Image (tube, rainbow, N blue to C red; front, top):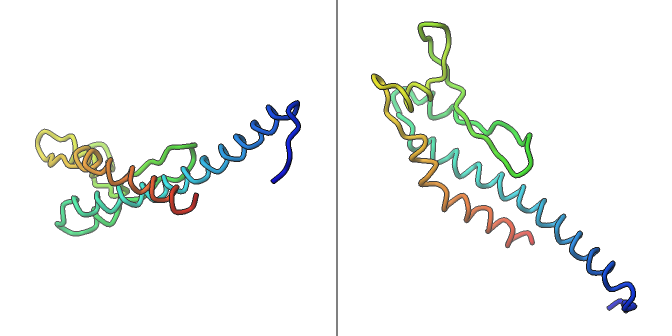
Length: 124
């Protein structure tokens, strides 16, 4: 073990904490990738199965932002003013709606949290 002069203790602690912070950052990002997969699988399972196209259309929308993941459905249908996302109709339409997206997300929170924790524990 490296000996640290008392005058350098503060710098040594800062270095250790910086390294730890970097590790946690990268592990959390990896965990969020796993959490995204959990949500996508749960949304696929909860999706209406009429043609199967809608369920297959759940996708992660990239890792553009730190500590954020976005999941959406790419299935579009023809509406009165052009193409619109089928997910909007199912979730919000008062006539054709069969809301399940928000409910599935809320039911997935615990499993997503576990996916993040397991990733950090496994790789940390």
